[in-house]
Image (cartoon, rainbow, N blue to C red; front, side):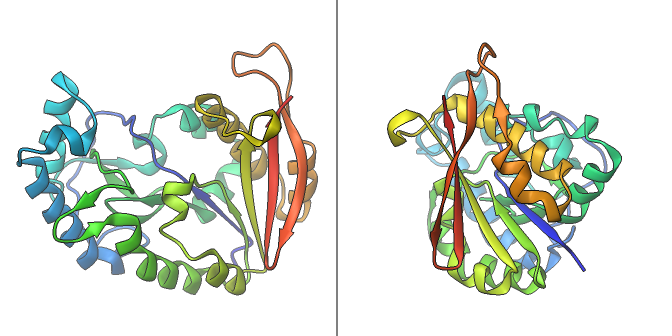
Length: 261
């Protein structure tokens, strides 16, 4: 039985290259293949349109790359999710240096919520792409809203009483119905990162989130509370000081706050 599921965001930063060829019906969530095809086709059409710069939010060489990788997702080269994503959170999670037991938990229960692919397991093949969960793609509309019913159903069917730790930013959390998932889980824990006074923590929160994900994966599921309550980033680090700041119960969802100190 799966004991722990950790919901992780993807990143805009991605490693180049890869091997093999991407198939839309591949990986742990291959039943989403038909939906992935719809998104990939809509993304490809939008990438070739006049609004590509606005869609991707970049210009110059970055826009050229975004258009290229988004125009032909199927058949492109792949890397495992934990190698493909290279953003700040993933750098601080540092999957390649996880201890053996922590890496086994990540391989078994790490799930990325992706605008293009829907759900991706830690070791699933992932192509290079650029597709925000908050993007609006004709004729689909806003991706988070479009994905929400099917991602909730598919993920709920795989929880089997597991403890869920949700590290998703709001944009990606909108693609899931937490109440439904909490009913399917043994426990549902939402982790939020804030500055003093409750303000959004910004870029530094991504680094803190990666360190927290690492601590969660290193702790046995029976000691999850201790791992979160004992989480601390000492003063003087490049990302500042962070520490556990309390919990709040909202029905079946427990919110754990980690704040700058």
